[in-house]
Image (cartoon, rainbow over all chains, first blue to last red; front, side, top):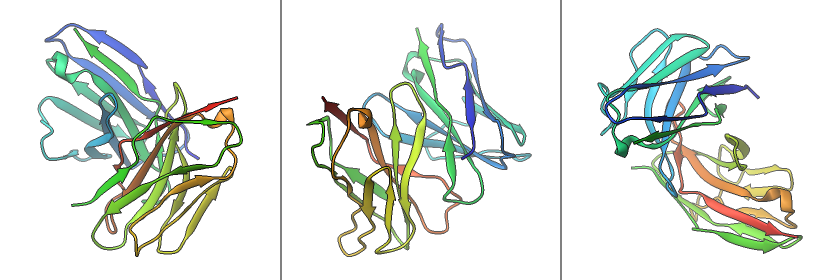
Length: 115
Length: 113
C-alpha cells in the first residue's frame, strides 16, 4: 500500500500560537487527502477533505478559518491550527486515497498539545 | 446519518483464545465496511474490508462477514497472539461518498502470554 508520513509526530505549543502539520504521500500522487482528529478514547472524526489544487471541504462544525488546509501538490497537504487553544489538543491524522474510494492509507498521526 | 457502533474495550485475552469484536452500523444505501488496526505508536492500517453483502474479508487470520440483515461486521480470530495487541476500529464508507470514513470508537485488545 501507499506510504504516508506526517511531521512533526508531536508538538507542544503555547496558547495563541499557530502550528503547521505536514502530511506527505511518499510513493503515490494523491489527488485526495483527508484530515481526521482523534480525541482520547474517542473515534476518529473527519475534519475536512482536501483535493489538490482546490479549496478543502470542511465537515460541519469545523472552523475553516481556524484549521487551514493547503493541498498545493499531489504529495503534500498541510494543516495549520491557527491561534491554538488547549481544547485543540488532540491527535491529528491524515490519510490519502490511492487507487479508489476504498483504498485509504493513513499517516502515523501528530500529537498536538496546547498549553 | 451513517454511524458505526463497536463494542467498548478494553478486551483482555490469553494467547490462543478466540476473539470476537462486535460492530454494527447504520447507513443508507450500500456502504463498504472496514476493519482498521492501530498498533502502539503507529498509524492505522487496513486489516480487511468487504464491499457488499455476504462478502467475507480476511487477513492475518482475522475474518469479518458483511451481514446486511443484521447490519453487522463482527471481527473474529480463532487464536490470538500477543502481537495482535492493538486498537481495532470498525469503519464504513457510505455508498457514493468520495472516500471519507466513519469510524467506531475503537476497541483496545490486549493479549497476555
